[in-house]
Length: 322
Image (cartoon, rainbow, N blue to C red; front, side, top):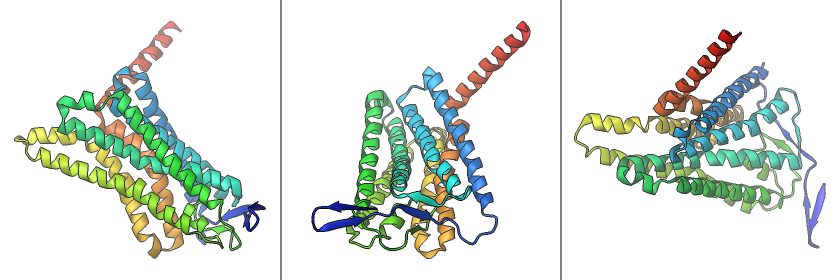
């Protein structure tokens, strides 16, 4: 399919791309079945966290607005990525139309980009709660948290639209094979046969703004928290303050450590290893995030126990009536 821009410029857009995925690995379909199981756990876990926060009015605090948004993002990202990956590889549909590929990329990259910014919101919440506890309810309000999250969504959607829009300015006359497990931005712009400099620039800029700056903010936040806590006299007070950060620190480690490995080693490892690493990096945090928050956050554990007691009482009443 061709489209013309002006008199002297003709862009060649392919009818479809081919997503190669993992090549040369026997019984690879079991890996995609494993991803399906991870997806189901992620859907159940994140839906449960969202339901718990919605049902308990005591969890309507600014912190849990950010936790709710994290669960929503994880659910959205898993649902945008995994079903299509299963359709491509488990049911042998590697051909994806040009427009569908760009749409697939937009939703995947939007959610993937939103995850580190969610962690920034939670990091800011912990920073203010520990360093300025007396001013917490003034500095971290519902309006502030809603505004911060809305601003983050605006940023990631804008950058993703720019990245995807720049791809439409490219002509494709080389291979149409994408060596990845989804419509990967870097893989696609490298297939172009005209000048892809703008896409190259955005590919370097967006990770810096969406990944490395959030990581830097989180590291600086916890460095400052650690410095302030070191001035606290008792070990008990120090431990109590750090305990409120364990869930968030676990989320940071689960998300950023695999990302750092993926970005620093991707050029030196086999394409299959890179695809496995990146696919696990995409699907594991959405599965583990709700588990961590349920197990390590006292307020959510109390709410879950309360809801289970209410459910058991209702079941007992039904049995007695019958």
